[in-house]
Image 1: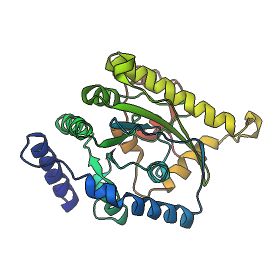
Image 2 (image 1 turned 90 degrees about the horizontal axis):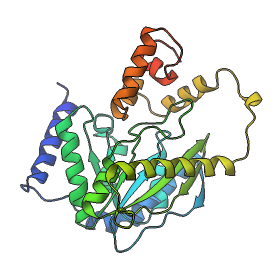
Image 3 (image 1 turned 135 degrees about the vertical axis):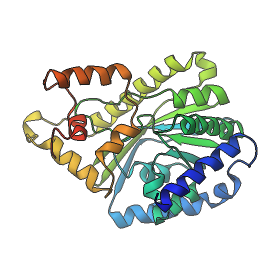
Length: 297
């Protein structure tokens, strides 16, 4: 077993002890103090990488309620680009412990505040949700990517999302701030949506999740509309293949397998895709065919 895997096991045990009350919650006050410095570092990193940012609607954060920032996910740089635009301190939920631990990026993730989750462990996923609720109840903010992984779909505006964001917000009396981001080469466009308040809406997590996904999709449309119309005739036949290569090239070692492990996929979809695979049709998503090794990129 590699040292990183051993450290991940210890990390998950430590998280369980926090839930059990044997250890304290992560400290948010120190991170809040360091927040301006951290955002300046993100600005410097963005300039070094040659990235530009366009904000269609500023991200508003209420002062009297804890917030769940719910973001769409298009690639590696989403977290850094959006993070720079948020003044409030928050803890981000991430499934990248093995990739991040011991790296410079991992150091800054920890400086920001991070909750790593093991998507292959039901117990750890449950503990992660409990920790999110505990942090929100303590007045701290949380960021989550409801899609679970990069949206590499060739036709879904926003991928299926699980109940995590809605469940945590309802349990902790927090609000959800939906944020969409899109990437055009080295240019990023961000659009923040209307705050979703479970108390005011008075709905369960199932309905709130549907509303959240619809809101994220609407924000994506606003971004697309702002960038003008693209004619289908201008797209090459290998456009999607190039798109996948560009995304994967941003993070060496990140695999298509992780895209499936980390992503929420309803059971009925998996069953449908398996049927299509057995029938040898072409109705299975391209990104899933890449994962299965049936399509090369």
